[in-house]
Image (cartoon, rainbow over all chains, first blue to last red; front, side, top):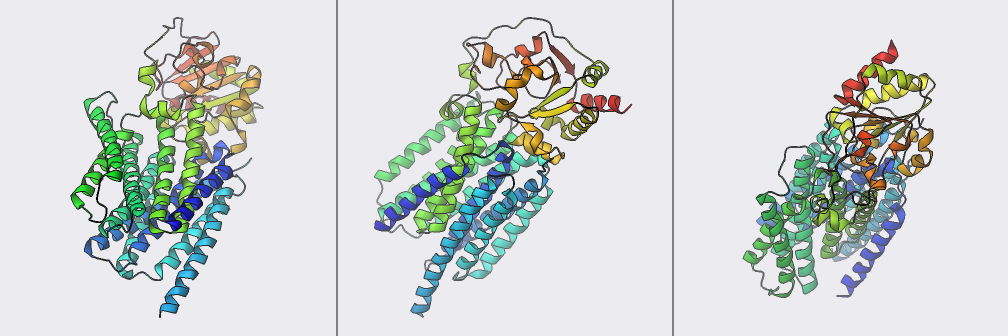
Amino acid sequence: METYILLGFVLVLSIYLGLELISKVPSTLHTPLMSGANAISGIALVGALMLAVGDQFGQLQEVLAFLAVTFASINVFGGYLVTNRMLKMFKKK
Amino acid sequence: MSILIENLSTLQNVIYIISSMLFITGIKMLGKEDTAVRGNFLSALAMFIAVSITLVNVVNPLIIIIGISVGAIIGSVIALKVKMTSIPEMVALFNGFGGLATFFIAWSEYSTTPENYFQYILIMLTTFIGGVTFTGSIIAYGKLSERLTIKKTSLITKLFTTIFYASLFYLIYSAFFTDIFEPNFDFYLILIILTLLGGIGFVLPIGGGDMPVVISLLNSFSGIAAAFAGLMLLNNVLIVAGSLVGASGLILTIIMAKAMNRSIGNILFVGYASSSSGSKSEETGEVKPINVSDAFLILENASSVLIVPGYGMAVAQAQHVVRELGELLESNGTEVKYGIHPVAGRMPGHMNVLLAEANVPYDVLVEPDDVNPTMDSVDVAVVIGANDVVNPSATEEPGSPIYGMPIIEVHNSRTVFVLKRSMSSGFAGVQNPLFFKENTRMLFGDAKESIGGLVSEFKE
């Protein structure tokens, strides 16, 4: 219970931090920010890996962990690469 | 052995803190033009170290390595092959995959029996948000790539929308009325099915022009889902990274909604159709067409030109030839700017990406607020495949459904060229009085061909 409260605190603070950090993004960067943030949401990969840590690792869990890892990896690799590709195109005069 | 495990867990947590710091710095740098590339790199580095340290105590490394490799190959191939015009649907697709991953994580957690009530609630919530993000994004992908054409008024849309509300009620119901210590799989299965179908119903009724809002919102959801998964698994880096994504998606959603002068609720649950039924002023007047050679003569003598692109430019793939025209005008001594409306196109920043691909430097791109005050000094405004974002009804007709929406006021410039295929109205279904204005000339035809014609006139 205490842990959840503490982590809930981290959650709320992080959202506020995110709102402050990104509030003044120029419109040029709207798409790269979106796809870059999209890549970050691939952090679910870490969660997927944690599934493969516990001792209750049956067949269903194995399949689910495999699927979660695969889809999260597509998100991570695809997201970072396409963001980088896009950002490289932006040039100043 | 137990000391080793304890130390490993401490080490992991320290690495997670470092990773969180890198994510925060990375996303901050991603929000500024000069540092964006490095910001993206830092966030990738944060991801790399967080994943690496978690890999250390995985019990079955083989299937994990296979999973990562398969994902890496598929993701990289899509990212390197995709055309810039297809970026909106690709972002939607990746977003959906992130949601799907959290959905599977929640499912797996449920199947290993929730330990307490909080974890149970978090599993239900993560399942719901992850599942809605997944199917919602797939529908968004279908709409953006134009593979899916289902009308919002059709029976199927209404059916799925109803299922969405049903899934919401079921979620709330499940929070209060289940015995968490005896997992009942049938009960959970119903949630899974309702959630996946409900996600379809969440996005199906939302029209093409509202896509920038939906895609930002789904982006936000995928982050929130990851953050909830972090709470569920008691993992702080998931919480921090997920929250940052949730916040950035939320900011974009708000920016997009403001640029349309509508509330998020109105976009998601009402749409234009019901609000536009009130007044529809029949615009009368004569449309004045112009041909390419006359348009060339006017452009040749212009000292300042504003190019206003919209979704039509993306459809016609005209960004390269537009850049060529811009350069020719500049070498002719004309000042050229590009007026970019935040919701032009199908995702936030859509026009900026297309023009960047065509090598248009980003500092000649201006926003409505910057260009509107000096609009009367613009000789020619060239509107390429944009409609609602230049509709003067937004400032002149209080009865219009788009009244109050900030627009690029091209009607205040000396001459307006509108490049358009036909006289059909824009996404909002609102007639555009701009076409009938005294200073407007219509250049009918495919945007790419028309601009190409102007380019070859200049070259002669």
